[in-house]
Image: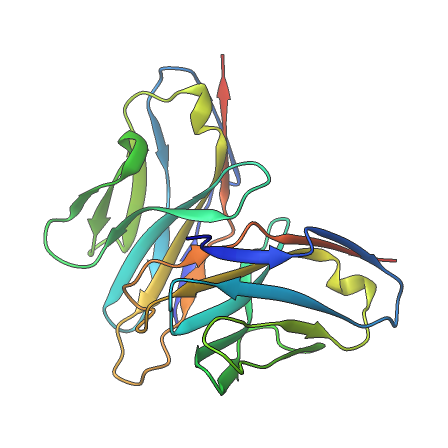
Length: 116
Length: 114
């Protein structure tokens, strides 16, 4: 079984300040990792994903995330946030399996609020 | 290319009523799924389908039925609505092998059961 923990349910940040949203996962097999963003009253859209290779992954809108296998983490970062980054952010994990029943498990989400 | 569409956007039901939430995609994706989103609980998988004629249960299937007669459509049926089914429902689709492919989400249906 796999699981995702997002410890921070809400993160307020001043505009132009840096931000880190934390994500830890648990799985008995190798995983793929994702960050999705949900803007107010919209569906989710993919920010970035880690499949293999470089542990630093760059996504849209200036976000990046670093995969740390030893700490089972996949934290999301942005060096300078903008008002338009106000949204809910979801970390998700899928386990690499040969059984054809892959599922995506989502964390509970972190609501990022940008303070002008 | 409309992507993933869902209807209706809003719905209010009385306890015991039934209804169908519609979902369609025009990207020829094999995989489709339904999630519910509740405050503090993230997204939970209700049912999913890996192709026409094939469906399976997710994490919270009770009270919901699905069918997949075509690649494009994946309706979700509430058999007898209960207040516990008040939620926001999202349909999503992706190419086969969900493990590494991006899921595309619809705009959601906000359901209230009185």
